[in-house]
Length: 103
Image (cartoon, rainbow, N blue to C red):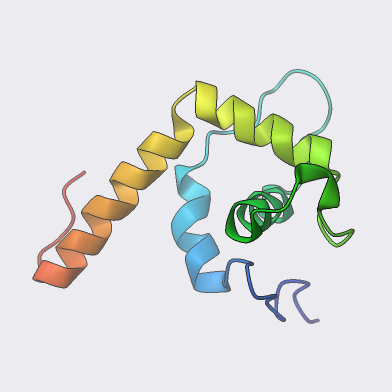
């Protein structure tokens, strides 16, 4: 069976990028609705940031713009984006310098 993410759009995460990013996202809240697959949400957020388009112009292959925006704002407020940036920066610097990343 083919993965729905096998064909990567221009601004979407590859499998390798998603494997690196997914563990850095906060766990889904146990309250409220059943959590949705967050990869399309992240891809939608990245599409908006990369293209500079209005949120409401998000293509239909992504979740609704309001869902992407809600996740973006939630992760902005709780510091998720900053934690992701720092973690990826540490990992990439360690790989570049040939040493194991510091946790």
